[in-house]
Image (cartoon, rainbow, N blue to C red; front, side, top):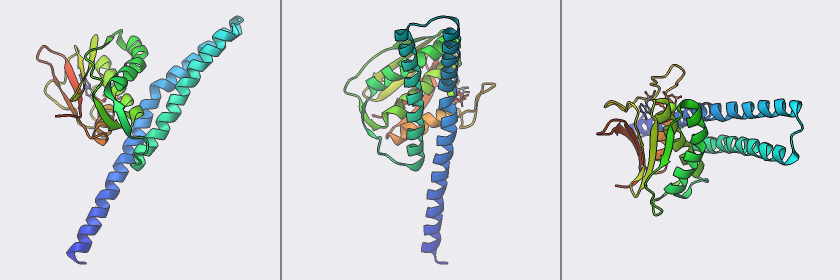
Amino acid sequence: MGLAQRTARGYHRGVQDQRIIRMGLAGLGLAHELNSPLTATALALELLIERIGAEAVPPAELTAELGRILANVQRMTALVRHLRAFARGDRSAVGPVALDTVADAALRLARPAAEVLGEATLERGDADPAAIVQADPLLLEQALLCVLVNAVEAGASAVRVDVHAAGIEVLDDGPGFQGHTPAAGHSTKATGLGIGLSLVRAITEDAGGRLEVGDRPTGGGSTRLIFGA
Ligand SMILES: Nc1ncnc2c1ncn2[C@@H]1O[C@H](COP(=O)(O)OP(=O)(O)OP(=O)(O)O)[C@@H](O)[C@H]1O
Ligand SMILES: [Mg+2]
């Protein structure tokens, strides 16, 4: 076999490996991202069934509650679809996304989880309406949600999200990363898989950015999704 053929074969194997890594990450990402919304949805349905059994729930309240549950199920369905597209390298959901919108959406999603996990305060800091990137908005929101959940799980009591021209920065007052960038599959939590940050990194890189974690000079952690200089 000539060198050109061998190189082509090697290249093909490389492409194939990348594809398998992407598929694995998307699958693990699904298990990671669906876990809490599925638990929350099951709990909301259980409570509703219990309530219907115990009292006459006014139809308007019933409709509103079922509407909230449906919206959560629809988000989960969309996540499955978008992560499958991510696995295939299909970029049809990619378009211009305002980072301010991503920050607002992720904070809205994270607040109920933050209350359950540690009563942390999640705050929206600096905004920059001109900060726009090419991304899949649903996946970028989900990535930022992972970062917020990590900060709360690390024990932070205050978490802030800033949007700048350069990207999104999440600052927390937890223990910080202590000079290390966690490796894929590395978790310090009893039930953690160490997937969250790998997924965040892959989604950020797909949007043309990079992920950087570090320690704040005043203590606490910083997780940055950097798209600009
Ligand atoms: N804001 C943070 N402050 C301090 N440590 C953090 C922070 N974010 C992440 N880490 C560290 O990085 C590790 C890896 O995070 P990652 O999200 O990849 O996995 P995980 O949260 O442990 O598990 P999971 O797969 O469920 O997300 C965490 O176990 C934790 O030790
Ligand atoms: Mg995590």
